[in-house]
Length: 179
Image 1 (cartoon, helix red, strand yellow):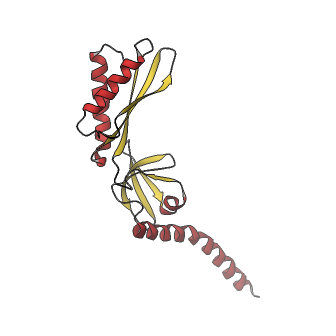
Image 2: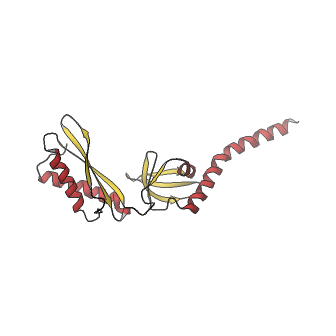
Image 3: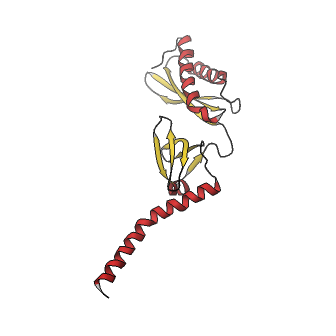
């Protein structure tokens, strides 16, 4: 064998390994487009990223997160990693709003206020009903989270913001301090 043959063979192997990832993402993009396990506008969670699918490309897809940033996710990762699609069966989106109250301020009352406030929002689904949970017990405060499903699902970020404002107003009206 000549040196040229060895060099060409080594380059071919290197190019083959380099194209393997690109080819994987390309095929995964085709699978996503044909199987439609995710669609533009779906709310998904993959790894530590969750948000709305903005674009599904041949190589990668773009997800707009809750804080407004865009995450580029290779299509191969969307196929091979664990993915939660909150809209796969046209279910409403879940949104969360957090609040803290003083430790001595009757936690059951705070839960009732949070659930009542969420249920009063027009975009919050009646079923399943909103649920307020204690997520952290601190020495001077209790952290709550209210979980609610929104209809329509594409408004979940707006509803979350409105719920946070409404929760703050409801707790202030009851003279329960946010910490």
